[in-house]
Image (cartoon, rainbow, N blue to C red; front, side, top):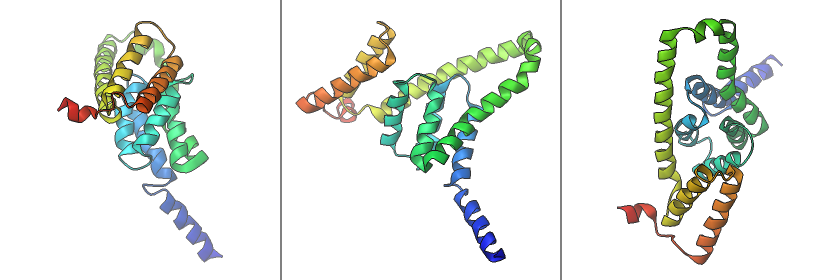
Length: 202
């Protein structure tokens, strides 16, 4: 009986080593601990720590990205999707807890000191710099997403058209995504603008 218990403990630790539950939680907790500036900032980190690490494939990542963008709620909800793809329902719970946990914990830790923090000029200057850097990270995320998701002239045209619809004409994001999906399907079915974007750009 004692030998069996030791074996079970060993299995649990082994599952948490890198590729198991503990490894998944740590990956999202680390991202959640260093994010400033909103969900878009975390996209390069997710591509690096979750996709390139082999938790999910690139196709699974971008399917989830489109799905979460078309639903209400923050982009952080993508953590539950990625966790579920990687390790099922327990993975979804652990990934969401890991990503949301640091920010929620910091919020409640700072809340009693909020008046002092808000009136601190040095901290305000520091946060202004953090926000500027976060905007730069969003720009970097756009470039990284373009590199990974845009494969043809049709993809590029749909991307730009959707940006114009949502950004200039205030079309709701879910509607923009549905329009983009319909355009992508139509172009592929007709064989229009399917030239490899990278080859053509070179």
